[in-house]
Image (cartoon, rainbow, N blue to C red):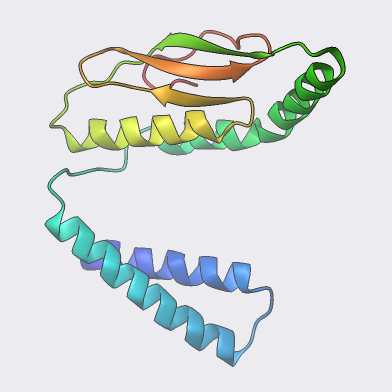
Length: 156
């Protein structure tokens, strides 16, 4: 618990300093205070949460692939929207994609579902509309041609 809390504080502190734009004593003190407050808030939420989440296996691999695909997806989206503006063609459509939910009470599966839905919605050319409990599918809105068949555990 202490190791996880320390890593969270360190990560938030580094994020603050990276986004501050300059390095100095004022930024370091402010970053330490903000990281401490955010860490305390996260620990309190984690302690009192009714639904538990765990960091899912494969999240870094799928997250890296998602972030690596943002530039090409943005270019595709720009082309599709430009064509739609010039021709009046409506490029959006909803797709039902397989999405294996897994057990509802398993923290690792809950974390995987949360990461999968967030990563699937980060792309500028698609986002998740619905992923209802009890159904092993997700309704995804997409621009342009449908992408390749997705991994049913990650929607990516």
